[in-house]
Length: 286
Image (tube, rainbow, N blue to C red; front, side, top):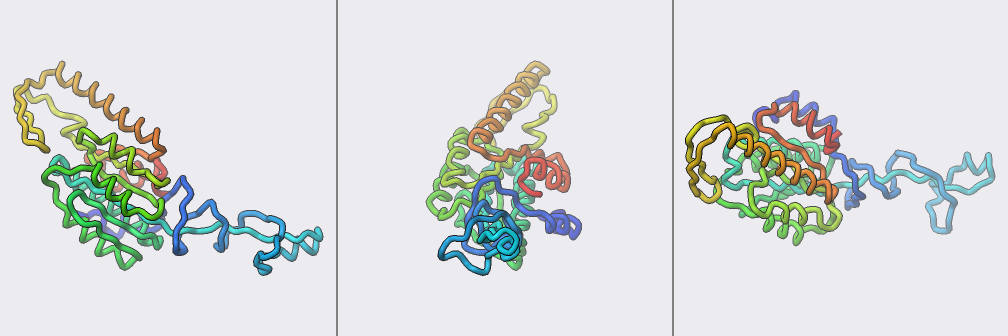
């Protein structure tokens, strides 16, 4: 399932990237992300006046000699990040290789996180949370993602509640889903709780984005099994595409309202193009 992602060319490219965060993050370990706090990295940020109790090793003696001012040097802190990967495994994800694309994107983001010393959690409806850390955790992460199968009905809202109950820090939450459930908006509003960064990877395929004109058909709801007989005429498909555009805009607008990054992950797009195009344009990685 992750054959293309495992290629040396793709992994080599990903290894040069890091996850971008727009909100303040704070972790327990030294990581590879620029924080709004001041800390002990090697990246100079600013000066401020010396105050009793400050580390005297940060005094800028050149400024003291030149200007007779007692200033200390401030440096950008680099924090670790907890990256929570939410992978939708409901029955509808089995269509058009949507689960495969969700797993590939989750694996790519998880790889970047682990190579930057971040912690990675994988949350799947109906399964126990799995946690990985460090570069040595990459093979286990990939194997775990490859074990996922689509089937049954999932509830992103319940997963969101579970993630919120476990979360002890803001971090980053990455949702990989086709959002084909009635309460998708409820889940979306829950995920960025406690100031977490949220990335919505909206995984859709040909069946949703460009259904062919097929005449009389039986449409089957992959989640419930309900069947509906209808004729797919030009007028019907035109109406469908209007509704689709409206829904996609609703999802994108909902993501913008809560400050989330939104990426339409089209399964027809080559993986490498999606990684280096869509994810970088949305400033998820860079």
